[in-house]
Length: 207
Image 1 (cartoon, rainbow, N blue to C red):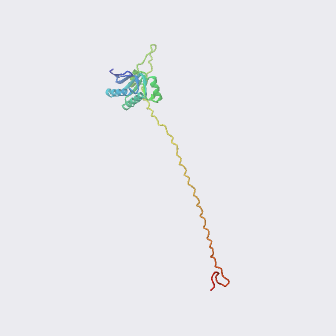
Image 2 (image 1 turned 30 degrees about the horizontal axis):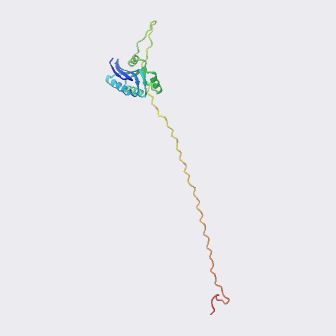
Image 3 (image 1 turned 180 degrees about the horizontal axis):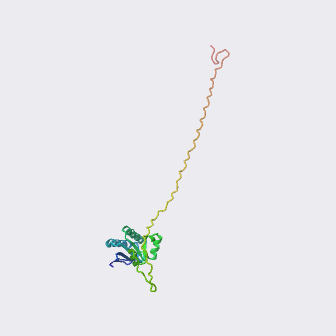
């Protein structure tokens, strides 16, 4: 089994070929500092070795954040796109809890050890264990089942309140003010000149 190793103070990984399976072993902190390197080296090895399966051993991972989980999801999508099985082994409790809370646990095929993962990928069963006191072999491991679909996050429905159209109050028509009727002018009769007793107007001098 040939191996390619990358070592760092906080993260190490090795990639090797074992029975036509790429076996990746990672240890340390799989976080935003090393998630990109982890994905890049696995992708390059996957294309270079043309293997039919990928086994990722995470038993020595001490920490994994959302970036590390994101890389595992990308590897899962790539394995399905290329019809190459992906099996995770030795998932630590902290990562197991994250995958369960995010609904991703059922999407991955998980085995306790690398050897059992290789047997599952090859479609066979591990060697039977025979008890010293009986000839009956131990039960065989059933064939690998297709992994569950990756759940898609549903966007929460947003309730938009109905907008009520404000009632438009038409102003009441004002009753036009009554125009006062012009009062009739009182015609004052002209004063008649007083008549003298002799039939002449008073004030005229007699000739």
